[in-house]
Length: 433
Ligand code: 5AD
Ligand code: SF4
Image 1: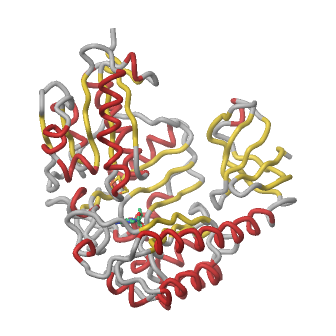
Image 2: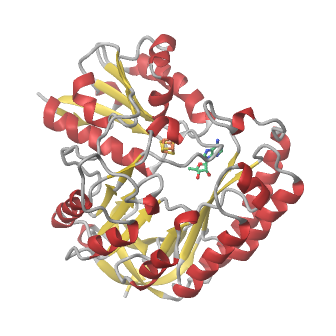
């Protein structure tokens, strides 16, 4: 009988893909199959995120819950970014944990899974040439890693500590993976990296034929049967004109882009070491809107970064007003270990930061509502990717908006014209025409 694996995934798309790799390796090499039931699992894995403090605190209470609910003899593993930066400390604080596997060590999963108290967290491990076994939680769309790690030193961010230095995966490996995904039913791929448009800066030693991100996009778009390419996350600093032109004119690249602002104040951006100013950010967004009609732009914003004054925050509000983001991921600054900003004086008090966050989110909600409402009546090309409860099928417009229609299995993996009848804050509701 196959053993059962329960896996919980926190954090970003990169972690989602790492979890798929973990499942694939354990299925292939250790004879596990996935279960949705914690109680029947022989192995429980929690794939963690450490980008903010909250999920880290949650980890230990979660381990406590797993310990109580697990069946006798079930093992517990902690993987991902918190595993990278806390390492052995996790086992010291929670001895029920059987192994700890860092975010850059996914390929070692089958070697730690049976070793009591194994800790593998090297952040210089090179996984860019590793041939992972195949598993995708959704056959209709594929996440594809193009680089690992991050070379930036944004002063708020723990990721370079947990995922190590940036290494790009050779383009032939990426294109081959895209081909396999398309052959098994995916018409859409999302290229993944901490800083995707810095692709090509450094490869594993001995790799030749380097390409930059724009060239990689061209290569990937040649794959037959592939309709939509998305990517996340790019960095505003590396959005040069050559890239924007490819983004605008390549019909396979979906008109959706994440442009993480972090702050609208050039003074704060400098303290964050982001490498661009408010003006550069606005210029890029303006250019994107001009070159790509109907594009959707999403962003990340941190409020309450150390030293952020009321005026600095107004600059952020000003960018929100000018760009009118389709989607906003906003966070209260959270000091992280091993980061420069955690040492900065002038930490903003929590109440002030909360008040700013509420104001930002409230204004964004109004904008988002207007943008979504304006879609009613339009006919959109929707790619259907999964079923939802109540006899609904879910898909995405080219610019990434969630669409629900009445429908079943036969819609999945197809592109259909949908007339949008109604819009909520997050969802377009329509019917196939
Ligand atoms: N505090 C709050 N938000 C953070 N992010 C990264 N580090 C921190 C931190 N220390 C946010 C950034 C990033 C997103 C993934 O998480 O906005 O783009
Ligand atoms: Fe979280 Fe960042 Fe690690 Fe993703 S890379 S899991 S967002 S800390």
